[in-house]
Length: 85
Length: 245
Image (cartoon, each protein chain N blue to C red):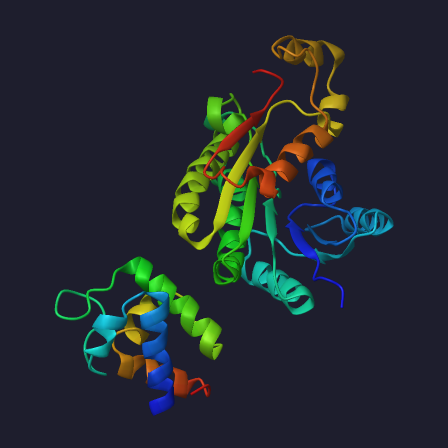
Protein backbone atom coordinates (compact mmCIF):
# COMPACT_ATOMS: atom_id res chain seq x y z
CA UNK A 1 0.00 0.00 0.00
CA UNK A 2 2.81 2.43 0.89
CA UNK A 3 4.58 1.85 -2.39
CA UNK A 4 1.28 2.38 -4.22
CA UNK A 5 0.84 5.69 -2.45
CA UNK A 6 4.41 6.66 -3.27
CA UNK A 7 3.75 5.99 -6.94
CA UNK A 8 0.52 8.02 -6.82
CA UNK A 9 2.44 10.93 -5.33
CA UNK A 10 4.98 10.58 -8.09
CA UNK A 11 2.23 10.76 -10.73
CA UNK A 12 0.88 13.92 -9.10
CA UNK A 13 4.34 15.43 -8.90
CA UNK A 14 5.55 14.57 -12.37
CA UNK A 15 2.45 14.52 -14.61
CA UNK A 16 0.72 17.41 -12.87
CA UNK A 17 3.97 19.26 -12.08
CA UNK A 18 2.99 19.67 -8.43
CA UNK A 19 6.04 18.40 -6.57
CA UNK A 20 6.11 21.23 -4.02
CA UNK A 21 2.41 20.90 -3.14
CA UNK A 22 2.52 17.11 -3.12
CA UNK A 23 5.29 17.07 -0.52
CA UNK A 24 2.94 18.77 1.93
CA UNK A 25 -0.10 16.70 0.98
CA UNK A 26 -1.75 14.30 3.44
CA UNK A 27 -3.02 10.94 2.27
CA UNK A 28 -6.55 12.05 3.19
CA UNK A 29 -6.39 15.62 1.85
CA UNK A 30 -9.04 16.25 -0.85
CA UNK A 31 -7.35 16.54 -4.24
CA UNK A 32 -10.18 18.55 -5.76
CA UNK A 33 -12.09 21.58 -4.59
CA UNK A 34 -11.15 24.66 -2.58
CA UNK A 35 -10.37 22.78 0.66
CA UNK A 36 -7.65 20.66 -0.83
CA UNK A 37 -5.11 20.66 -3.60
CA UNK A 38 -7.58 22.42 -5.92
CA UNK A 39 -7.11 20.21 -8.95
CA UNK A 40 -9.39 20.80 -11.95
CA UNK A 41 -11.00 18.53 -14.53
CA UNK A 42 -8.00 18.61 -16.87
CA UNK A 43 -5.81 17.52 -13.96
CA UNK A 44 -8.29 14.70 -13.37
CA UNK A 45 -7.82 13.59 -16.98
CA UNK A 46 -4.04 13.58 -16.52
CA UNK A 47 -4.44 11.60 -13.32
CA UNK A 48 -6.72 9.05 -15.02
CA UNK A 49 -4.13 8.58 -17.78
CA UNK A 50 -1.27 8.38 -15.29
CA UNK A 51 -3.01 5.71 -13.21
CA UNK A 52 -3.85 3.77 -16.35
CA UNK A 53 -0.24 3.83 -17.47
CA UNK A 54 1.35 3.16 -14.06
CA UNK A 55 -1.05 0.54 -12.67
CA UNK A 56 -3.10 -0.60 -15.67
CA UNK A 57 -6.35 0.45 -13.98
CA UNK A 58 -9.12 2.05 -16.01
CA UNK A 59 -11.43 4.70 -14.62
CA UNK A 60 -14.41 4.59 -16.93
CA UNK A 61 -16.32 7.82 -16.47
CA UNK A 62 -16.74 11.03 -14.56
CA UNK A 63 -18.87 9.55 -11.76
CA UNK A 64 -16.25 6.92 -11.03
CA UNK A 65 -13.46 9.49 -11.29
CA UNK A 66 -15.12 11.73 -8.67
CA UNK A 67 -15.26 8.79 -6.26
CA UNK A 68 -11.86 7.28 -6.93
CA UNK A 69 -9.80 10.45 -7.25
CA UNK A 70 -10.97 12.05 -4.00
CA UNK A 71 -7.74 11.52 -2.05
CA UNK A 72 -4.48 9.60 -2.25
CA UNK A 73 -6.07 7.10 0.14
CA UNK A 74 -9.09 6.54 -2.11
CA UNK A 75 -6.90 6.11 -5.19
CA UNK A 76 -4.66 3.61 -3.39
CA UNK A 77 -7.73 1.70 -2.21
CA UNK A 78 -9.09 1.59 -5.78
CA UNK A 79 -5.77 0.33 -7.16
CA UNK A 80 -5.68 -2.33 -4.44
CA UNK A 81 -9.30 -3.37 -5.11
CA UNK A 82 -8.41 -3.90 -8.77
CA UNK A 83 -5.63 -6.25 -7.67
CA UNK A 84 -2.93 -3.94 -8.99
CA UNK A 85 -1.53 -2.40 -5.80
CA UNK B 1 13.25 -5.76 -35.11
CA UNK B 2 10.93 -3.94 -37.51
CA UNK B 3 9.43 -0.65 -36.38
CA UNK B 4 5.81 -0.97 -35.23
CA UNK B 5 3.37 -0.13 -38.02
CA UNK B 6 1.45 3.10 -38.29
CA UNK B 7 -2.03 1.93 -37.33
CA UNK B 8 -5.03 3.47 -39.08
CA UNK B 9 -8.63 2.63 -38.23
CA UNK B 10 -11.18 3.60 -40.89
CA UNK B 11 -14.84 3.17 -40.04
CA UNK B 12 -17.01 2.27 -43.01
CA UNK B 13 -13.69 1.63 -44.70
CA UNK B 14 -14.71 -1.04 -47.19
CA UNK B 15 -16.66 0.94 -49.76
CA UNK B 16 -16.89 4.29 -51.51
CA UNK B 17 -14.97 7.15 -49.90
CA UNK B 18 -14.06 4.85 -47.00
CA UNK B 19 -12.37 2.39 -49.32
CA UNK B 20 -10.40 5.18 -50.98
CA UNK B 21 -9.32 6.39 -47.53
CA UNK B 22 -8.29 2.90 -46.40
CA UNK B 23 -6.17 2.51 -49.53
CA UNK B 24 -4.68 6.00 -49.24
CA UNK B 25 -3.02 4.81 -46.03
CA UNK B 26 -2.05 1.39 -47.40
CA UNK B 27 1.72 1.26 -47.77
CA UNK B 28 4.61 -0.70 -46.28
CA UNK B 29 4.93 0.13 -42.60
CA UNK B 30 1.24 0.77 -42.06
CA UNK B 31 -1.63 -1.35 -40.77
CA UNK B 32 -5.16 -0.55 -41.87
CA UNK B 33 -8.14 -1.71 -39.84
CA UNK B 34 -11.18 -1.67 -42.11
CA UNK B 35 -14.44 -1.45 -40.22
CA UNK B 36 -17.75 -2.43 -41.80
CA UNK B 37 -21.28 -3.04 -40.68
CA UNK B 38 -22.93 -5.05 -43.47
CA UNK B 39 -20.63 -5.60 -46.42
CA UNK B 40 -17.91 -7.93 -45.18
CA UNK B 41 -16.92 -8.95 -48.72
CA UNK B 42 -16.06 -5.37 -49.72
CA UNK B 43 -14.16 -4.81 -46.49
CA UNK B 44 -12.19 -8.01 -47.02
CA UNK B 45 -11.45 -7.02 -50.64
CA UNK B 46 -10.17 -3.64 -49.41
CA UNK B 47 -7.92 -5.35 -46.86
CA UNK B 48 -6.62 -7.67 -49.60
CA UNK B 49 -5.78 -4.68 -51.79
CA UNK B 50 -4.11 -2.93 -48.84
CA UNK B 51 -1.98 -6.04 -48.32
CA UNK B 52 -1.00 -6.03 -51.99
CA UNK B 53 0.31 -2.53 -51.42
CA UNK B 54 2.48 -3.78 -48.58
CA UNK B 55 0.32 -2.85 -45.60
CA UNK B 56 -0.83 -5.10 -42.79
CA UNK B 57 -4.44 -5.00 -41.65
CA UNK B 58 -7.71 -6.74 -41.01
CA UNK B 59 -11.43 -6.14 -41.35
CA UNK B 60 -13.74 -5.92 -38.36
CA UNK B 61 -17.52 -5.93 -38.21
CA UNK B 62 -18.92 -3.36 -35.79
CA UNK B 63 -21.90 -1.06 -35.77
CA UNK B 64 -20.51 2.35 -34.77
CA UNK B 65 -23.90 3.20 -33.28
CA UNK B 66 -23.24 0.51 -30.67
CA UNK B 67 -20.59 1.45 -28.12
CA UNK B 68 -19.98 -2.13 -27.05
CA UNK B 69 -19.05 -3.28 -30.54
CA UNK B 70 -16.87 -0.19 -31.07
CA UNK B 71 -15.01 -1.03 -27.84
CA UNK B 72 -14.51 -4.60 -29.04
CA UNK B 73 -13.10 -3.34 -32.35
CA UNK B 74 -10.70 -0.88 -30.74
CA UNK B 75 -9.72 -3.58 -28.24
CA UNK B 76 -8.84 -5.93 -31.08
CA UNK B 77 -6.73 -3.29 -32.83
CA UNK B 78 -4.90 -2.50 -29.58
CA UNK B 79 -4.39 -6.21 -28.87
CA UNK B 80 -2.77 -6.69 -32.28
CA UNK B 81 -0.79 -3.49 -32.67
CA UNK B 82 -0.69 -1.94 -29.16
CA UNK B 83 -1.80 1.47 -30.49
CA UNK B 84 -3.95 3.39 -32.92
CA UNK B 85 -2.23 6.31 -34.64
CA UNK B 86 -5.04 7.51 -36.87
CA UNK B 87 -8.80 7.23 -36.52
CA UNK B 88 -10.91 8.14 -39.54
CA UNK B 89 -14.60 8.39 -38.72
CA UNK B 90 -16.09 7.76 -42.12
CA UNK B 91 -19.03 5.44 -41.40
CA UNK B 92 -22.31 7.12 -42.13
CA UNK B 93 -25.60 6.82 -43.82
CA UNK B 94 -28.63 8.83 -44.80
CA UNK B 95 -32.39 8.43 -44.78
CA UNK B 96 -33.44 11.47 -46.75
CA UNK B 97 -36.93 12.89 -46.65
CA UNK B 98 -38.74 16.11 -45.89
CA UNK B 99 -39.13 16.81 -42.20
CA UNK B 100 -42.91 16.91 -42.42
CA UNK B 101 -42.82 13.27 -43.45
CA UNK B 102 -39.82 12.13 -41.41
CA UNK B 103 -40.35 9.42 -38.83
CA UNK B 104 -38.58 9.67 -35.48
CA UNK B 105 -36.90 6.39 -36.41
CA UNK B 106 -35.36 7.95 -39.50
CA UNK B 107 -34.15 10.84 -37.38
CA UNK B 108 -32.63 8.60 -34.71
CA UNK B 109 -30.98 6.16 -37.11
CA UNK B 110 -29.14 8.94 -38.94
CA UNK B 111 -28.07 10.73 -35.76
CA UNK B 112 -26.96 7.43 -34.20
CA UNK B 113 -24.64 6.43 -37.02
CA UNK B 114 -23.34 9.81 -38.17
CA UNK B 115 -23.00 11.67 -34.87
CA UNK B 116 -23.20 9.23 -31.97
CA UNK B 117 -20.97 6.85 -33.91
CA UNK B 118 -18.27 9.52 -34.04
CA UNK B 119 -18.57 10.00 -30.28
CA UNK B 120 -18.32 6.25 -29.67
CA UNK B 121 -15.20 5.80 -31.79
CA UNK B 122 -13.45 8.89 -30.42
CA UNK B 123 -14.36 7.87 -26.87
CA UNK B 124 -12.92 4.41 -27.45
CA UNK B 125 -9.57 5.59 -28.89
CA UNK B 126 -9.08 8.90 -27.02
CA UNK B 127 -7.35 7.46 -23.97
CA UNK B 128 -4.97 5.37 -26.01
CA UNK B 129 -3.92 8.39 -28.05
CA UNK B 130 -3.72 10.67 -25.03
CA UNK B 131 -1.59 8.16 -23.15
CA UNK B 132 0.78 7.98 -26.14
CA UNK B 133 0.73 11.78 -26.40
CA UNK B 134 0.23 11.24 -30.12
CA UNK B 135 -2.51 10.57 -32.64
CA UNK B 136 -4.82 12.18 -35.14
CA UNK B 137 -8.52 11.92 -35.76
CA UNK B 138 -10.19 12.89 -39.04
CA UNK B 139 -13.97 13.01 -39.25
CA UNK B 140 -15.67 12.72 -42.60
CA UNK B 141 -18.43 15.28 -42.46
CA UNK B 142 -20.39 16.77 -45.35
CA UNK B 143 -21.10 20.06 -47.04
CA UNK B 144 -24.69 19.35 -45.98
CA UNK B 145 -23.60 19.96 -42.39
CA UNK B 146 -22.41 23.46 -43.30
CA UNK B 147 -25.00 24.72 -45.75
CA UNK B 148 -27.99 22.49 -45.06
CA UNK B 149 -29.90 20.70 -47.79
CA UNK B 150 -33.64 20.17 -48.17
CA UNK B 151 -34.58 16.60 -47.39
CA UNK B 152 -31.58 16.16 -45.11
CA UNK B 153 -32.53 17.75 -41.79
CA UNK B 154 -31.40 14.62 -39.96
CA UNK B 155 -28.18 14.19 -41.95
CA UNK B 156 -27.23 17.88 -41.95
CA UNK B 157 -27.95 18.12 -38.20
CA UNK B 158 -25.69 15.12 -37.60
CA UNK B 159 -22.89 16.44 -39.82
CA UNK B 160 -23.21 19.97 -38.42
CA UNK B 161 -22.89 18.30 -35.04
CA UNK B 162 -19.76 16.50 -36.20
CA UNK B 163 -18.22 19.82 -37.25
CA UNK B 164 -18.88 21.38 -33.84
CA UNK B 165 -17.74 18.19 -32.12
CA UNK B 166 -14.51 18.34 -34.12
CA UNK B 167 -13.73 21.87 -32.96
CA UNK B 168 -14.51 21.10 -29.30
CA UNK B 169 -12.58 17.84 -29.18
CA UNK B 170 -9.60 19.46 -30.92
CA UNK B 171 -9.38 21.95 -28.07
CA UNK B 172 -9.69 19.20 -25.45
CA UNK B 173 -7.07 16.97 -27.00
CA UNK B 174 -4.52 19.55 -28.11
CA UNK B 175 -2.64 19.52 -24.82
CA UNK B 176 -2.26 15.76 -25.17
CA UNK B 177 -0.66 16.04 -28.60
CA UNK B 178 -3.70 14.75 -30.44
CA UNK B 179 -5.10 16.62 -33.46
CA UNK B 180 -8.73 16.45 -34.58
CA UNK B 181 -9.97 17.70 -37.95
CA UNK B 182 -12.74 17.06 -40.44
CA UNK B 183 -13.31 17.05 -44.17
CA UNK B 184 -16.61 18.11 -45.67
CA UNK B 185 -17.04 16.60 -49.14
CA UNK B 186 -19.62 17.97 -51.55
CA UNK B 187 -20.79 16.02 -54.57
CA UNK B 188 -18.59 12.94 -54.90
CA UNK B 189 -18.78 10.27 -57.60
CA UNK B 190 -20.66 7.34 -56.12
CA UNK B 191 -23.20 4.75 -57.07
CA UNK B 192 -25.91 7.18 -56.00
CA UNK B 193 -24.66 9.98 -58.22
CA UNK B 194 -24.08 7.65 -61.18
CA UNK B 195 -27.60 6.25 -60.86
CA UNK B 196 -29.22 9.70 -60.99
CA UNK B 197 -31.23 10.70 -64.05
CA UNK B 198 -28.96 12.66 -66.41
CA UNK B 199 -31.02 15.83 -66.00
CA UNK B 200 -30.80 15.83 -62.19
CA UNK B 201 -27.12 15.06 -62.38
CA UNK B 202 -26.51 17.97 -64.76
CA UNK B 203 -28.45 20.34 -62.51
CA UNK B 204 -26.37 19.37 -59.48
CA UNK B 205 -23.10 19.65 -61.40
CA UNK B 206 -24.02 23.09 -62.73
CA UNK B 207 -23.65 24.37 -59.14
CA UNK B 208 -20.09 23.10 -58.85
CA UNK B 209 -17.53 25.73 -59.96
CA UNK B 210 -15.06 23.03 -61.00
CA UNK B 211 -17.86 21.58 -63.12
CA UNK B 212 -17.65 17.95 -62.08
CA UNK B 213 -18.22 15.62 -59.18
CA UNK B 214 -15.22 14.84 -57.00
CA UNK B 215 -13.55 11.47 -56.88
CA UNK B 216 -13.38 9.47 -53.65
CA UNK B 217 -9.58 9.58 -53.98
CA UNK B 218 -9.70 13.38 -53.93
CA UNK B 219 -11.36 13.26 -50.53
CA UNK B 220 -9.02 10.53 -49.32
CA UNK B 221 -5.91 12.55 -50.17
CA UNK B 222 -7.10 15.42 -47.94
CA UNK B 223 -7.82 12.96 -45.12
CA UNK B 224 -4.35 11.53 -45.53
CA UNK B 225 -2.83 15.01 -45.45
CA UNK B 226 -4.72 16.00 -42.28
CA UNK B 227 -3.59 12.78 -40.59
CA UNK B 228 0.04 13.31 -41.58
CA UNK B 229 2.83 15.27 -39.91
CA UNK B 230 2.58 17.67 -42.87
CA UNK B 231 -0.52 19.00 -41.08
CA UNK B 232 1.12 19.14 -37.65
CA UNK B 233 -0.10 22.71 -36.96
CA UNK B 234 -3.70 22.13 -38.09
CA UNK B 235 -6.35 21.13 -35.58
CA UNK B 236 -10.05 21.88 -35.14
CA UNK B 237 -10.52 22.59 -38.85
CA UNK B 238 -13.29 21.49 -41.17
CA UNK B 239 -11.89 21.47 -44.72
CA UNK B 240 -14.38 21.63 -47.57
CA UNK B 241 -13.62 19.32 -50.49
CA UNK B 242 -16.36 20.51 -52.80
CA UNK B 243 -14.92 21.70 -56.09
CA UNK B 244 -15.52 25.29 -55.05
CA UNK B 245 -19.06 25.25 -53.67
